[in-house]
Image 1 (cartoon, one colour):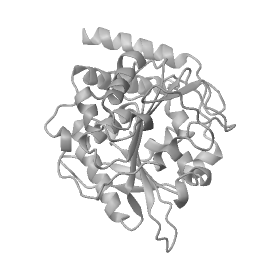
Image 2 (cartoon, rainbow, N blue to C red; image 1 turned 180 degrees about the vertical axis):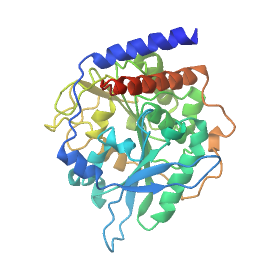
Image 3 (cartoon, one colour; image 1 turned 60 degrees about the horizontal axis):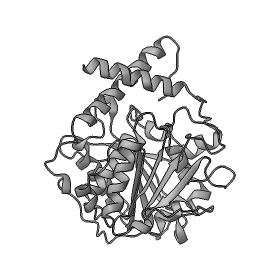
Length: 350
């Protein structure tokens, strides 16, 4: 039965990736921005550690306190050090323009954590404490320049799942979160734990991997039903997932390109084929340059910098049941197929 289910899922994904497929243009600009990131590694916590790529806005003699944005990659985008910024445009957030959108400090740390997929590590509950340990360690190393009240977390697909889980585990740490096409959604009980955290959710209604109607929307409804800050929450729905110039992405799963572009098209207008509402259902009209980055910076927490020694609210809990396991297995199959096709000179980017 498992083999039949996997075959059906793989067939659906292969078909969806073949529709509207256009190569991502890795321009000189994005390459230069990626070159601004440095490598680091977190300590061992539990049985694992994670490594990361980070951008620092700090200049010589700088005494400013900057926000920290933690970024979690999707499954299949953490097979080698640096891949977590190679497979998306989060490096845009290191540009002078986007850094300038972080309030009056004109900058933010970007910390892109990797789950070491080449070692079989993916974003499941066993990686929650290692991820937290890496964040704690990074804060300690940059304690003179990190604004503890402005720590944010975002990520896509399985990384979006990790964003939700990190917030549920450690709600005291995050001033706001932005999960993208998350491969897991909180129950009402779990959403209650993050009721004071503003959430900006982004997903395509045509997503072929994480079901919009049956997974993403119910999770959003749970957030709204329990939130004490519903008017500050946002939900952006994309139709066809597109690049900033309106070109369709390889897959409608690729909602993260909208976020990487700060929710605006390259022309500064509203992102192509998208709409946004707040947690009360009221339409939100985004006007450049006040997009995701400005929204993040407007929110603060009372986090005091205390380190974590366990999984917080998720201590002792399983990862989420059989559907999460199926999702993991499904992606492993895709990665295996990609490697087989590459042997025959066929490129399949997922």
